[in-house]
Image (tube, rainbow, N blue to C red; front, top):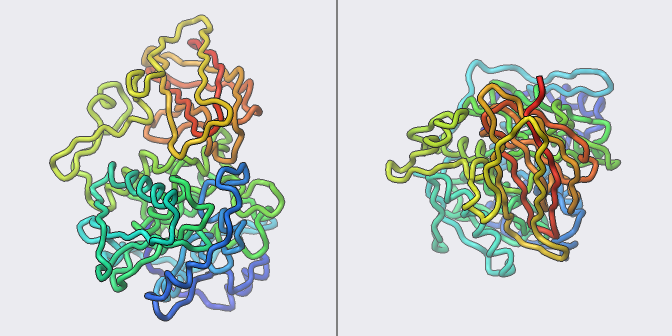
Length: 465
């Protein structure tokens, strides 16, 4: 999820790929060109009137907001601004495989070893920041909540900055966009907050970029987990789905998380309402582009990247779950399984349920018609079984707001063995009747909501042998 430099690719080859894939050469590496970075906040602060901050049309990530605003033409991968140095690096980074009309096109050359430059780290994990006074109070509140998402679960510290200090500056722009990593040579490093970016998951995504994260769906190993449907992508925007090489992409050995805050949704940059990203495991269709902020894997990767991590106990058994977590700053032990293993007392709902050979019913509802919140509420259940028993669960009925990425609410079932990963998410009636199977001893089930209501009727039992 972090980038490094690789050799240059001949422009003629780029032009050939552009022609084959209907990409203009200028669009392959788009960038906001600016000789004077100090002027960037002013140039970015050309906003448009809001569409509707509570709209069903709302997308989970900044890049697809920019699609509606028409700003993606000058942004790399939809929401990334490149410096001239980074643009030069990315112009050399086309070790890239694209499947188009049954042809696989490979670009670029390999390096023996990639690097992660210290120049792009925030020194000692300290991030001075300022919030531009032109932003609304709501935007300011959401920015602070998004900062808290990262700060509360890593050793990274955000501190208010003086006007002269090198700082991350949140400005009112016409897009949701950010630079990658720390621009240490500048006194102001802008993060653009457009009107329709005022959501915790969107701003958390842009902060992730500013801390050094790239997009999950461009990981070097992404082809093992997703297909890119290039025929459904808007003309000129196929470069937003560029795949990194294994030499220039480093993920600290952590698994691919469909629910990552850095993952685009299934219809990102679509030209025809069809999917542009298809999970190889169809259960994750609505997990991609999730609207719940940084996931456990995101947090683990950020802690590893900034060397916060001293001790980490691998989850998987009840004993590991009880003892697992991070130790950072050598002072505080945090248990980061709250979104997976919280008990009934955490939110006043949920509980532990023991699966038997007979069907049992779980009927739960959160929220109500007309309800809206910037914050997501959760209910957690543990469906328990023996270590070698199989739990069978059927979604009998699921109702509420159906949205891309389940950004307003839904049901999550953590059926995979690695409980660190975001589970299968469902929020539309088309999920009714689906049956999920999982090995014991624990199947976490999570109901979440922040708009109107989410209601799930599910039944579960031990699978008969």
